[in-house]
Image 1 (cartoon, one colour):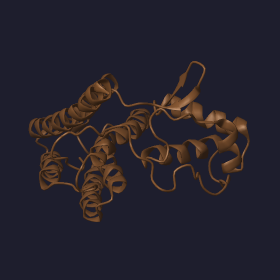
Image 2 (tube, rainbow, N blue to C red; image 1 turned 90 degrees about the vertical axis):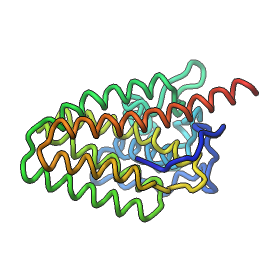
Image 3 (cartoon, one colour; image 1 turned 30 degrees about the horizontal axis):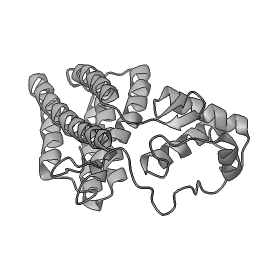
Length: 251
């Protein structure tokens, strides 16, 4: 997926905060999921949209006051994000937003390649085929909005539909954590693009070929389409991170 930069620039994971940076928002309503889960969801959105940037400290007291909940709930929410690798703990600083790294990126794509290759070789049910077709239609619709977050979410939803073919709730739940972290990296593409949120036709064509191969039952073609798509995205993001590291090292 994703917004296609013409060339990797010195931008990358160090992103500029939007104008509403630091404004966490209205207090959370605690009627559907646990307070910790809602904190994790809210912080995930703030990280993915760039309001909370790589390396930024997550101060429990400030977050608790902004969200109108207890520090304990904030602490538990941050721990959930640590499991999802969006947050890490640093000595003398506490919880900070994770900084994207090439090693982490490589591991993510290895994980995706293994799991999704297994998924495209599975025999789908008619319902799973229909879900994958709907996910592709949603990706096309998101591409027309030009909104990077919507595009990334639709992209990962498409791949989640692929993994659902395995028929395992555990694997699907595991892939959701991978997809959230993956979204962080995919959004890097949009932050170095001259036209943020733009999706080139080649990217949609990759997904279309993958969909057609899966629907036709051609597992070999599906594996080839998946591998080509993942390899290309992996290399593009890797180049961006490497360029950002080189730029930081020269300063």
